[in-house]
Amino acid sequence: MTFPAGRPRPAAFLDRDGVLNVDIAYLHRPQDFCWVEGAIDAVKTLNIAGYLVIVATNQSGVARGFYDEAAVEALHAWMNDDLSRHGAHIDAFYYCPHHPQGTVAHYSRVCSSRKPGPGMLLRAMRDLPVRKEGSFSVGDKDSDMEAARRADVPAYLFTGGDLLAFVRQILDELATPAASESPPFAH
Image (cartoon, rainbow, N blue to C red; front, top):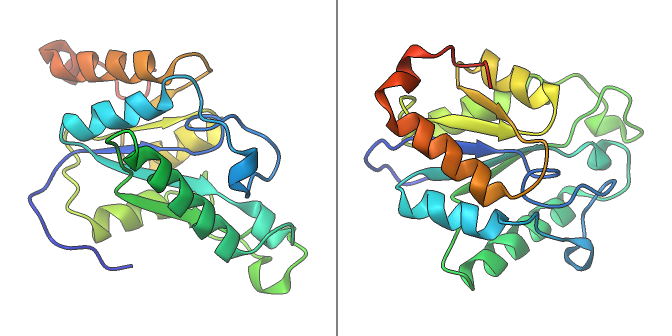
């Protein structure tokens, strides 16, 4: 993956299943996709605020043989097409197709990109002009929180509801001077 250089900007690292879309087991087809409430507007708000919006998602369905990498990439392209109709976009998608108990030999292994490993976030920070200051991660699982901690990025646990309201709360918190004094993983 090659990205153009640009001025460094903070990044919003978003998990996919359970944060952007309703989490159904092994989602890989657009017809099964359903945006979480407020997700499209949350992405647009981040775009307008100048954030790089980066999706980092475990996709063990590849290792388990339920779908292939082409299906993951097609779904991500569909997501961006749908977002573009609303004036929003995701700057980059990172996914880990590996799982140590996978049934597809090529993908059946331990991988530092698989969350709770920080690999996807670290790779995005190398590939893109990410400014760590102001960056944050949103996930719905402990593994998302751990990956962000290992990448030294503040993490916020999304437990459902309106993603736009959740993101606005994070942006408000990051905009206040007291935010820099609070422990980064207490959210």
